[in-house]
Length: 603
Image (cartoon, rainbow, N blue to C red):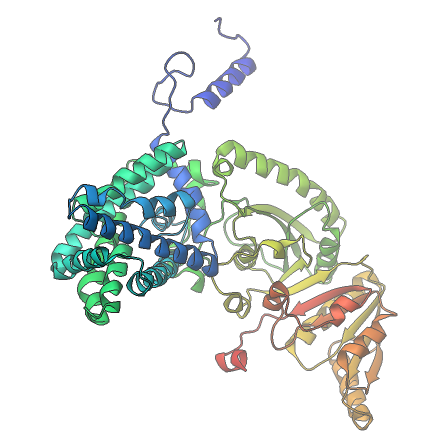
């Protein structure tokens, strides 16, 4: 084949060649020798894909997946005991079906402490996930595994599943672990941890299910044949003894389960750290994440997680690193730049009322499922390029206002929690987002409880329910709260930039309270620069009906959050403000960034 003379044509040929064979080891791209194995960097990339799914999963997802895995371990214990009884304790034959429970777990994608929780170690080593995030993942999965194992042990002990000989064999197998010294248990568990971590690496190197089955079967068959210990199996065995009144619970945990847990953990982490991780090249992170090491957590974030910043680095984040410029900053996270024009207009009008204001639009691309292809460089480049094309229209719309404009793209499994990290990193004064079923609420995945996040807001928040957005006639219900103060700031800004008519409404309990309500409303309006607004006092005592009546003549309702908060209740559908759904006009819900103590949150 004659090599091309045109440099562009030569480059195109090289691109095709790399698509067929990406290895730089010298193996030919075409011909009889074609690579059929993943490189260590590619295996690392696939493990990162799995780790992203796990580290960003909600606690409920993790726990119930781990619960199923823990109960599946019962299959391993049941078959091991049954075959031990039926083969007169033959060490090879009795172990032949031992791996079945692990095959069920690993091929089924359930969460097992010693297997599926080890990929996040790779993220933590690269400072892509924090140590608290890793520990949280481990604790939730281990709790689920133990709960499932406890349920399985109870079934075996009281359900009559085992024959008399099988029950005796089960007692004998469990008793061997109890009789082993803690030091020996630890060493044997280290070897088991090495085997299981090796399964993780080899499993992601395999290209088909049959290969995975063979790898998992042989690896876990080595545990009983080698007299090794796996912590979830050991926990199930220990509880079986407890249920049969042959062992005290605390003694079993201290002398049996904890040494095995420590050994499995050390063995797994050592293999990932000392062997698999360091055999990859320095380009491993660049191949797995956007801009590689430039997007790592700081040392403080790595050590303390969300308590001092963020606990996870998204797959793609094109925002410029470093300190943000001064001035008033409005962050606008959007799921679809084509359709969310209303939230951009609201953000720009509010920002225009401030000097040296910046509107930063962030296109948040949700990645709700594990897709290894999304981690390739070409795929990431395509996502970023398509997003930038969409954001060009955003920049044009924002350019019509007297504000600075910034745009960026974020690709993440946990789109909702990412909003909080974006606002914190960009030092936002205000975050404006749209509320709807097809917006960023639709795939809420967080590693922290929603209440914890929303009680420590990184900025003020506005949430728009857009129904033919019109700023001509604004209605603001007034109450004594910082959220109403934020609403007043928004209304005052919109009145200036959109020449809007403003109505302030205050609801009192009865006609006897009207005079005092009028005085309060007049003073409140004057203090916030809204003294020339129309003032309405309703003495019915029914706040929602009063708002609904007054909103019939309004085009936009701006309403502050209650003391119970806004964001968590929007996500869970427990807002308790039916009027928001009942009115025909657009609605802006406002929540001031305030910190509420434990007692206020509780009561």
